[in-house]
Image 1 (cartoon, rainbow, N blue to C red):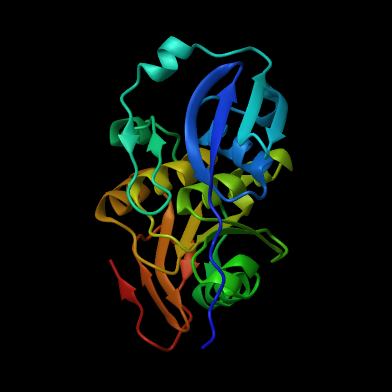
Image 2: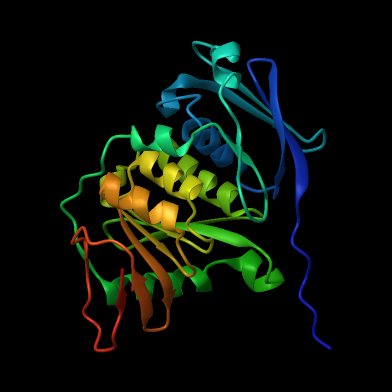
Length: 251
């Protein structure tokens, strides 16, 4: 009998300017990308240059982040916490109301649906931990040239934070990128993508009603069930053109 390997997860403590934020269940890879992405997604920083240093101690299970200008612990942690659904359960400091205050996303780019399906296939073929274990999530960005970059983690939120961190650290412009994910697009996943400014989000699974409502409000295209020649187009910003012969469900 063939058996796949087990996915890895470890408790890792995030410490910001000496303040212990929380313990997260993470896969030990691309942790610096995760630190940048999480700090940005949750509002600790607005740009990568605000982080002075990131020190990772895998043996001790800790990530220490030093911010150039510090942060207001009382103000940050007085916000109501919202626990996220699904694997790698985490916490976000942004409510639905907070997310609606984000800037709306604008981009002049458009893509054929067949192109997104092709890139989704490339993404799947370039997710080594998922292929090895069958139990990992992934997030992928596609740039203007069609080049893909993949990050994987036990948690879908962590994988998205990792790819956002990669984009931040490399100065990539969000309006020129596509975000693809293996996970369900829930409101907190949508909030991460919206805060960075991705104009198009594609997933191999579903989007929640709350995420679709926010996407419409924030002018983001959301495509679900990207599989083979199938797709659900949840929004209608005009950034994704249906060039398939098969019927594609529109919402």
